[in-house]
Length: 367
Image (cartoon, rainbow, N blue to C red; front, side, top):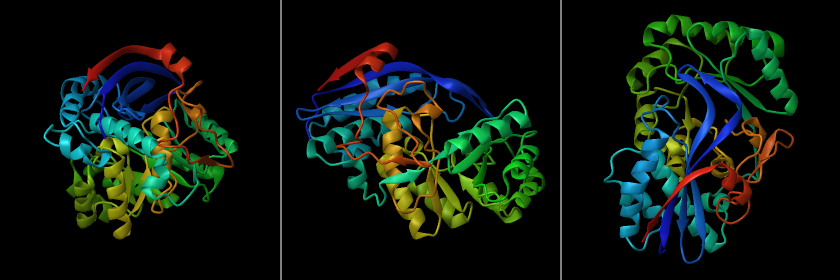
């Protein structure tokens, strides 16, 4: 496939409800979008790098810079390219997985549109809809948290995940179990907020029958996670620690987790995400698709990925969970599920009137 050029689009969009985690609060998405232009079709990708380097070392300004100065020119220099070769072409550029994931997604979207094939069919998805889950940030009080969870359950969400941090863990979980019972699918996410010295305290969560405890320790502490997994009964899930299929294989070998959160942007793209899914499924490790407050561009790919057979309910929420008006046609909650897009490519595209309103700058890199 010949690329005519690549456009880097900067924009920003407000969240309806700021998301507070152990490392900060997110009230606005600083968007970096990539458009791959070919003679036959245009494709779009969304970079999930946040504004500040708090979740990971990547952040939006750096992603836009590396895309414009290094990734796009290197890809265009290749001449003929396919989505399956993007990772290989960009491999000499160290790191920047979120930026690489965005440009790979744009090329993949264009390629599949030119073929008239949906992303779900390309992946081998086995479902036409996926159960919707919601991730809830740290709130001002336990009472407020209970009210927020009740609202999401009334909307039909099938799984609840709450953010935790030292001083906000056992009591919020206890309150939710008391209010909603033991049958509520409940998860907690620490975003690296604890150390192995907190193992005895974290073991207090075992009594609540949680589906998982996500990323309790630091992102580079795989061995410590393996030790923690022997000290608590709640299944450990890894997020920030898993950067590739290789790191997932290490986690499986060390028995550092029983569940993996696959965030396509974090691992370098949807194709690497599928490799992690296949690896985990072959080794009896559950997976789910995590979210980064994506617009409909990123959400479309996430929903299709989550339709593969190894995925449990994840962080895929309806558009109105995050935005008053999504960048694409909105994803709607229907009987607790989201429909998997069936159109060519990712099956969605930015709405011109919305993009025009939120766009900040563009950069065109010609072949």
